[in-house]
Length: 283
Image 1 (cartoon, helix red, strand yellow):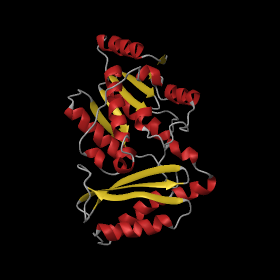
Image 2 (tube, helix red, strand yellow):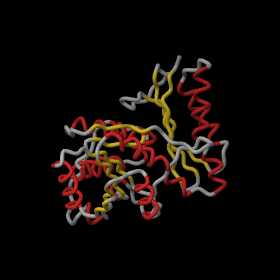
Image 3 (cartoon, one colour):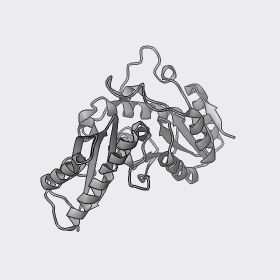
């Protein structure tokens, strides 16, 4: 039996009751429109605790006015079906007014990690993420929370926030789940036309190209980025937001590929802003 809880009070009461019974809680926060990537996170969380909670909430505070808040895809019925199949025991399904009541004033922010990668082009995004995840942690009271590595910067920010604010929550990162042709699964893939979908593989293919060049001994980041840019722009419907090679712990850019380097990129394909990343291990 899967409980569906729509208020903060009901969700907190549910979690508190489980805690009184000595049970532990795994938590997967999402914005809905679930796909196999989300399901993989649920599958990671399921055996780690007695209870598995999924939240579905399209968080308005992480969207700038010109972004796709109003167009963000939704299919709650399918989400609930997938949740039940994955063994979720409770779904937290609040609306905007429930999460942010009248005269809401508080914001959670980090100093350094949001300054890089997606934070440059989406300056309000990670403040909204940190704020809503803090609220969700206080409402759901999980012991374990699972986030996808496709949003590498988000995962790094949440880990830092949990450390800084002394949340007693274990943060687990789930691997990127890809389509057969390599495209990282994302709810925003739903925006792609058939022609744009063909071009969207440029992100994963560009990462493969980078790995090949590094394996051949090329270490200069400017040279590698120029080659990736030319490759991506050879596909139709593409516009590059950023391609960065950086330290995977600090997210600070590097000029030369190190023993372990993160490559992260964001590319606009039609109306869809797609992201991808990989850890590069240089010989």
